[in-house]
Length: 228
Image (cartoon, rainbow, N blue to C red; front, side, top):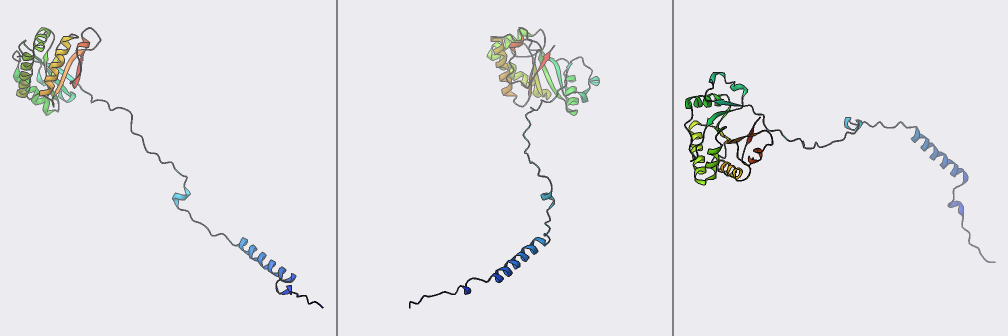
């Protein structure tokens, strides 16, 4: 008779009762886990608040306006006590009149200019000398067209400004014409700027576009005074 090897499965497979007990135990564990209270989680103030968007401010595109100026023209006939210094930023003392050779006529009431400079500086007001004025176009034209007389004008004006401790000069040439006259004006202003780089240099120009306005180039000027 042939022998047939047999394997007892009872050692490897659990009985139905064992499977039932195991299933019941697993079910009990799952139910217990579901019934256990959840552990509270505490959030910080930053975590509980609504998220905020952080933006980097863009630089302002609005240009900074130039400083506001209140300018008074004071003639040699002015009474110093009536000048409202606290309400002013600049005073133009007028006029120092030019000659064709680059020299100047003597200034009227030099003592009054000295007084205005002293009082103005005490009130933080800048004082300039206005050179020329209406009716001195011929002298300007002749002087500026000649390099020698133009250089003499520059030297003499600087010496005058140093003597009276002035803050700048207002070139009141009324008016250089477009073309060669305008270029002579520019040459004059360029030479003045070279010898007084830290002082104010301004010009009186017309306030509307007539035949004279285009003859006043703005290069090297701090600002212009418009005549209306």
